[in-house]
Length: 383
Ligand SMILES: Cc1ncc(COP(=O)(O)O)c(C=O)c1O
Image (tube, rainbow, N blue to C red; front, side, top):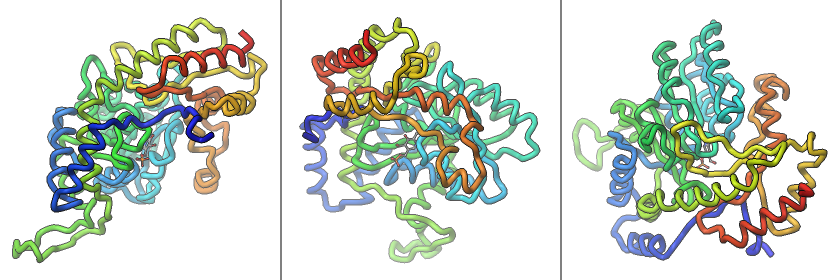
């Protein structure tokens, strides 16, 4: 039963991935060896960036980004409520204060007009903005970096959905505009290492600190003897293993091909759903190439006089396990308790949450399975 169920996303592991892992398992070291260096060098090449540090998860990448910038309890950090909980938690790990700015419905990203109003009127100094390339569609990076310079804050790109996306034809856009870029290699992301993540930057100071922090901040002491280490700052064990890194390198070599396959799936959905009233296909920003980590379909259940839970259960009964991305962060009990948020504080994200359904998109989704999904949706919508 479980195996038959089609998820909204699915990792893509082939023989070459298995071979890469198997080969690395015969190396003399299983962590902190040459596969890590190779994966980092491949990421640097892909992003045309100076530095990359791979870590144990995308959450660890955000945590280290926040730590490297020295956020503390007096700092205010802006992000969007429409993201995975890890984005905002990275602010809380440092005891800093999150400020949410609602999304806009043009591209599902942080609303830049509302952001600028906040930056203009806030009596609190905003230390950083974490912008999320939701679903795999790049944000308006030119204007974000213009605001970062004008109001002097650091810009983090939570790029966990968008590895392989292009902005004005460039897939290395993120490191061009943001001070720090974070990646996740969770199985359902565009490439996977099982669990894993990375921080990519052109800033040596940030890189150097992160590189130490991921390994307990251990560094060579003055003696320079390899067995004599020094620690100046509280660090973590956020290391990735060698076999995960070898899988990462192999996956990265295929990512453009895998995204092309997702693009074809998205194109077919778009053709079917773009003309249906009260249904919205995912927007693609002008001059951008969508990486389709997910395909968020908006269904105005109210106007269609339909019920979202009924739809999710209907599909589950038919062996499709759809998902919702995301319950807005300000509506979680933890955030309400800590910051007194009310559900209606960010109405656009809330409306989005009520209407969004992530439908199956992954490179090996079979044509007849996609057709079956489309037919079922027509049936559910009574079209
Ligand atoms: C936008 C975003 N940020 C951060 C993360 C955290 O990544 P990980 O699951 O690898 O810790 C995710 C993963 O789901 C994500 O979607």
